[in-house]
Image 1 (cartoon, one colour):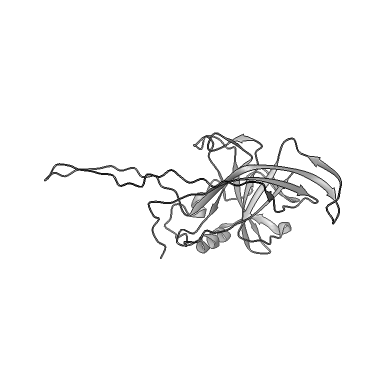
Image 2 (tube, rainbow, N blue to C red):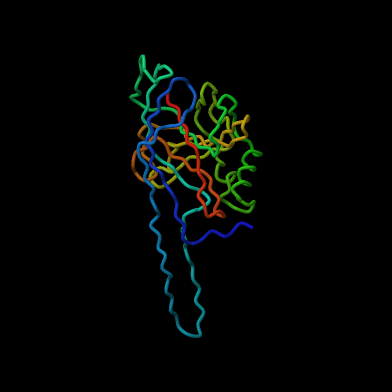
Amino acid sequence: MKREKEWMIVTVSLVMLGVIIFAKAEPIGPYVISNITETADLVTDGLLMNHTKGKITTALFNVTQPNEDWKGYVGNVTGKLVLWDSTNYSLFDWTFATIDGEVYASRSDSITWTTVSCADSTHVATEDTFLNHIATQPDRINETFNNATHPEFFVGSTQFASDDCSFSLYTYTNNTLEGKAFSEVLIYDTTGSNLIYAALMNDSTLGFDEKNYDFQMIVGEDSSNSANLGYYFYAEVG
């Protein structure tokens, strides 16, 4: 049985700056220049209450706690397109003034990008099961990625028209869901049976904490497992 979430939980936010160098229009693994993990500022002391003997006190508590079934990644990406050979000698390259593309995260280190499609309810349910997200959870994947709207984007040469995919969300801007600056979509590698989180880049845009980012995304975790779940990151620009 899935354990209850603890009242003291740490969420992870990684600030990733990747340099992407492309020889072909297909996602690749980025070089990570820096990463910083931030911990929520939690009040862990108990609340002292001391009322009159023989009386009944009605209390209304408000509790906000980090969610150990998810973790977040935000950051910036630099990159260029290049013509190079097998020994990494470049004939010519093109640096982007404005970054555009996607950042991807998957539990798999082997993705067949030519057979990627929108994730469906079966794919999402399978991932929820792997993460030990139970049906009564309000924060399971299908309840979290429930927006079903997103901009057009490409994965390699595969086009996804606006609102093609059923499982998507928008992460927060300025601590609220006040805009649609950062879209994230669930896609699926049909060859390797791998769920992929796709964050659509938005060049130097105000993010969740009033800082500018190129991407924001969340990925699933298993709160019933004491070990952290690792993800492989990929990106494409242009």
